[in-house]
Image (tube, rainbow, N blue to C red):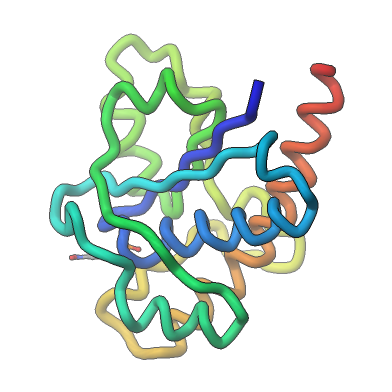
Length: 161
Ligand code: 4NP
């Protein structure tokens, strides 16, 4: 069975689509696109149906990553559908777990920055109201976190198979 990852931020137009597309890029490079499935969602309904933010896409393109996607809102059914849910910041983490009424999915929800090995920040900062450097920082952090996450998922899969 494929391992399913869901990346979650507030709007699903900046951080989580970047995480999804960076992770897909790494997964493809590793030849694991059938084994590891990636998706993203937002805790809010603000941007449902929108493509990734242009400023975010520009920053990703500088690093060779094309952002594709259409924003959707996180749903309770995602707890069942995904093996691991990666929150970009603590507010996203709390908002996700607030929907876990039976408190049975806590172990599936983790902070994305917990997988960083080169950066010390504990959250992926919201770049929406800032300048271009914020968007570049998001890509830097996510490249680091996605590498760590890929190694984690591969080690998890090896321990199961
Ligand atoms: P994201 O960024 O959560 O990384 O997609 C944001 C997008 C939109 C808003 C805030 C953050 N907003 O307030 O509309």
